[in-house]
Amino acid sequence: MAIGSAAFRAPYACDPEQSRGRLHSEPPSKGRSPFRRDCDRIIHSTAFRRLKHKTQVFVFDEGDHYRTRLTHTLEVAQVARALARALGLDEDLAEALALAHDLGHPPFGHAGERALDECLSIFGGFDHNAQTLRVVTTLERRYPGFDGLNLTWETLEGLVKHNGRLTDKDGKPLGRYRAHGIPETIRQYVRQQDLQLWSFPGVEAQVAAFADDIAYDAHDIDDGLRAELFSIGDIAAVALPGKIIADIRAVFPRLDSARLVHEFVRRLIGLLIEDVIAETGRRLAALGPSSADDVRRASAAVVAFSPAIVEAERLIKGFLETRMYRHARIQRVMSDAAGVVRDLFSRYSARPDDLPAEWKEGLAGAGEAARARRIADFIAGMTDRYALAEHARLFDSTPELR
Image (cartoon, rainbow, N blue to C red; front, side, top):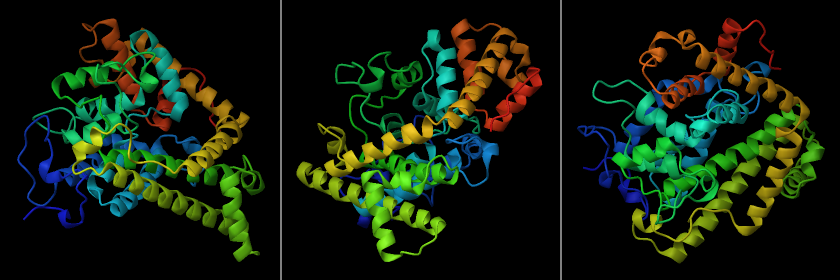
């Protein structure tokens, strides 16, 4: 008997029984589908545990109630499973993609990523999506027969392409990769296992990408309000949040502010989920796919917001960009954090003996590009607190990030 809920799986969903397999052949699990096995491997990985002390927006010592990469990831996984269940997809694959999507992020959020990208500018730069692939295929070392987690083709494909195609059919880079090309990590990997960079990913990967958007839209508003970067009146001036808040106040006119915010977040998430389900259902009905490969070969993504919500979400992101991500307090802390990353990279580059023994092994005979990438791998795997501790060990003065 097949493992999983095949009776409830739509024909366009990825079927674990028809998986394209793993790069390194392994005997199947007796009690778990291949995609459930991927979930479990991700959860038990070192990189997953490190998400607990990696910045989402606020650094770890600003308070216990703000999102970290780990709590954000768990919220994304919950939304991804809800979407997958409603659309008849494989919930385990959607969850695996949600759980792994941020494994490549360095400490200190996007500030840390920008700093590493600058440090590696002459060596191809740093891309967190490519780093996620590097983590799950190379850097995790838990098994005797191979490096990485040896995840299924479908999970790797989804991690690399969850935001859409990377190239056209002629191999020409698309989107954000148009200017600088496909990262070397991805190019190297697809030489041994073709992830079809020219096609869209399966529906589960597309769902995971929208789950990420839904989670951080709603919860960044929650965190921004908690940090008093803006008020409930400020966010109520944005069209969709304003309507939701007005609806809540109409029913609960005396609701205290804390409960108002929680109810707002709950309703916003629910509204966005329902919109994705409805719009995706319309697109799937129009396409009429009979397999996951029909979705991959489609001329456009099938998972989407409706046009009205696309505009509403654009306004929410614009508000958060101005009032939260570019807030003077956040910018100051992130500027100091980026300096920590640059300092560490420069120090390890000049004095590789300062690296732990396992990380400096083999560096003496490596070329400059390989050394730089190895140092970036080490820094990218750091938590916020470990990066600050390393900086304090190596330098006379370390900024206080708060």
